[in-house]
Amino acid sequence: DQQVKQNSPSLSVQEGRISILNCDYTNSMFDYFLWYKKYPAEGPTFLISISSIKDKNEDGRFTVFLNKSAKHLSLHIVPSQPGDSAVYFCAAGKKSSGDKLTFGTGTRLAVRP
Amino acid sequence: KAGVTQTPRYLIKTRGQQVTLSCSPISGHRSVSWYQQTPGQGLQFLFEYFSETQRNKGNFPGRFSGRQFSNSRSEMNVSTLELGDSALYLCASSQAELIYSYEQYFGPGTRLTVT
Image 1 (cartoon, helix red, strand yellow):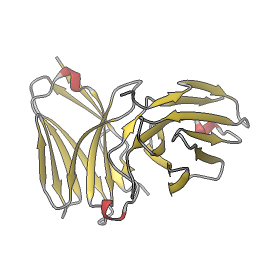
Image 2 (cartoon, rainbow over the protein chains, first blue to last red):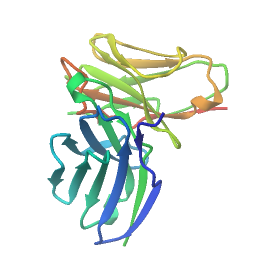
Image 3 (cartoon, rainbow over the protein chains, first blue to last red):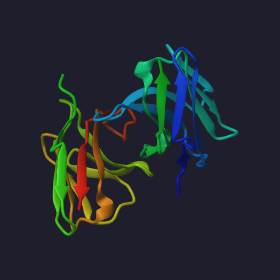
Image 4 (tube, rainbow over the protein chains, first blue to last red):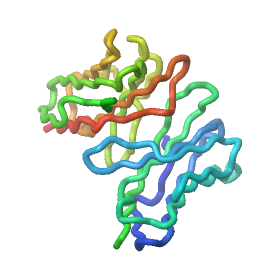
């Protein structure tokens, strides 16, 4: 049972435009959400997170939006740069209970120069 | 400060063999988690160790086991390898003290191929 889903395996965006990566979850108990970025031959690196008490968190070019009623979160990258080309994983957990993270299957983003 | 290191980086084994992977966390980090990454499944949580004790466990068969040493270094063992065990195995460390932490730092992974 895939509790965290990234339905788009890949996304291609022109440099300078907005990249929107989507993630859906099924477990309403999740209260903390994260995005990780992974380059080939490297481990994932933490990008940005959001708690369920918020609906938006911004860090430079990266913004994460959380829609609890729809059980949906998205990552916006504006403006997109070629160096953003990587695989992006969303993850969710019940931080209040110290439970493990559940990851999505990843979306490969390609930013075209 | 050195990052999380994993050895070996690449490994080829045949079905039925067993394998041991190693992970050295960031200095001062006492929690080590292991994940399996496959193309269709994303990152699947295997287990987490803290102070030499398994604190969290994912839904993997008993062929997958691990341990942690007093210096926080961790090993993961897979016995009786199957073709489906071919994957990238990632280790992550954190400073988590009381509960599992989401602020994790990942190593580069060990690419295991089972033939």
